[in-house]
Amino acid sequence: MLKTSLIEGVTPAQFDKQIVGNLLLEHVAPEVVRKEKLLIGVRNEEGDIYRLIGATKHNSFTNAVEELEDMELVDELATHEGTHEGCDAIFREA
Image 1: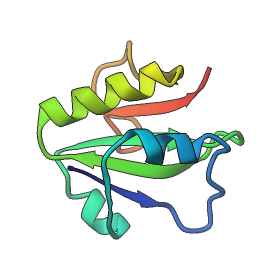
Image 2: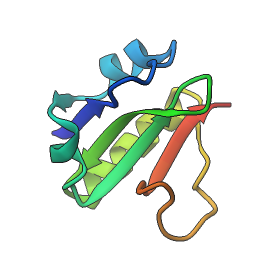
Image 3: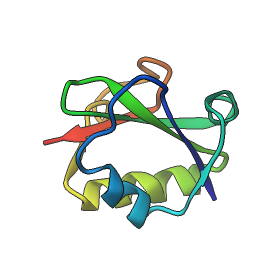
Image 4: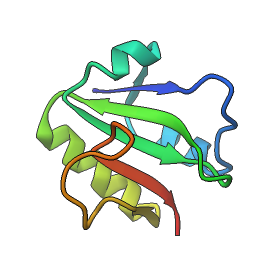
């Protein structure tokens, strides 16, 4: 199961309920999510990362990325090497 946390003080995106409904997420503290091997950030309409999703296994990460893409969200790091803002993928509305 993927671990997730909202970032305190940052407004969730309008589409957040769709993410929570489509992915199997365990809600944990942000510091627990940050310890996961692979991290996905999700940006709100203002461009701020408001949710972190952590995956222990690459397969779980790939499945989450595919699910977010199916929701027509865009991974802004898809063509980049390495991490950005501590994340391996960062999704936002198209």
